Image 1 (spheres, rainbow, N blue to C red):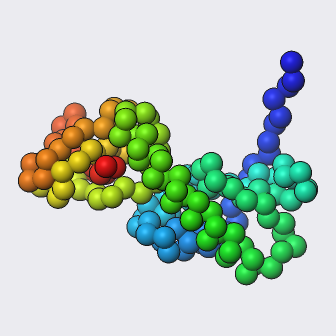
Image 2 (cartoon, rainbow, N blue to C red):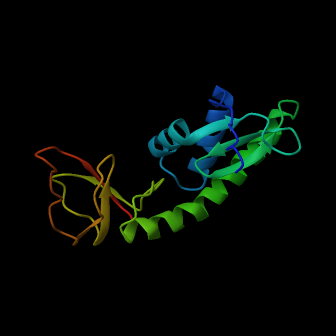
Image 3 (cartoon, helix red, strand yellow):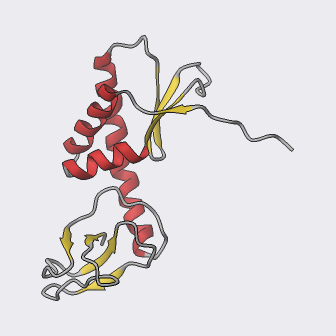
Length: 155
């Protein structure tokens, strides 16, 4: 049996993070969610690419990058990762709607407990392990365990 390969990962450099956030905002992700997504799921996997370069990842979407490349090239890499995350996010929303616990990077809409539901659909909350819930437009979004939470529409 083969031993699993250990991957050395490091945080993104600040300029990389900022570039990836700009790219996600450019494809429609709200700024606060773009920042949280990159901060939580962004990393550089060191030297794992067969060509010897590092791989830059946000969640499960990545591309090769070498430190000798101009920073302008990184802007293109960031736009490519963002475009691929749009496709991945659509799939994740579908899987979350089916009850699978997966991270959805940006929802269709957001509202807090006590707000009137702006649109009928399936909604989830951050950090709560539970199945998506269906709410009808016009209904008041509930609290969870007497706490105000942010609801995210996923479908």
